[in-house]
Length: 255
Image: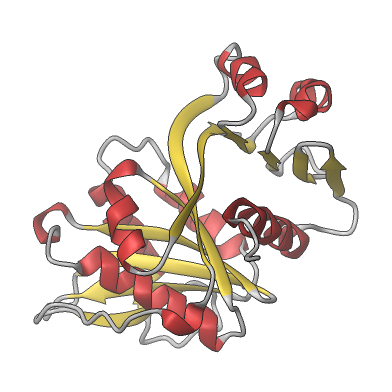
């Protein structure tokens, strides 16, 4: 029988934590709870709660969690309520999704007038790649309600493992109109950073940029992928071969 999609999602999450962790960080592997607790107070916690067996362990970790992301699946309602009672953690509903076989990603071309280019994330990246500041500015323009600081977002993107790749769709004038990204962790990949300029939406650009990220992950050795989707994007990801793993609430706390 095929592996349940939530097990694929959890395995991808654990692989990502393994890649992000530092030697002094604490790996969390408790009933219903997986993740990474950083050794430095300036770093961010990263947790995945799969069921309410995690309640006591999560409650014990929260007082020391000054920043980070905690994803709580719908199968853990008590843990969701625990975090909702804490105003410092901001909730966002998401749908966790997985792609079981990246060999089956369809070829999705961009519309005429747009070209995919890599983003210059690190200082050693080619100088003719799209500047990271341009890609970050495009993301914030696509999400006007976001209160992310552009410098902080850029620093976070630079801090990701070397197996992270970012992409930008630029128009004929060189302006960034869409973005996507992926991190590859062994045979698993995580897709993120998918955004489209408001005036370019409903042309298949988000679908094409996601496919670009998935093909990059496949070329880097990944065979499966996971992501967290907003409701408006679920149909796009389904069309690329993703399936729903679980509903979840993602809690974020800024440092």
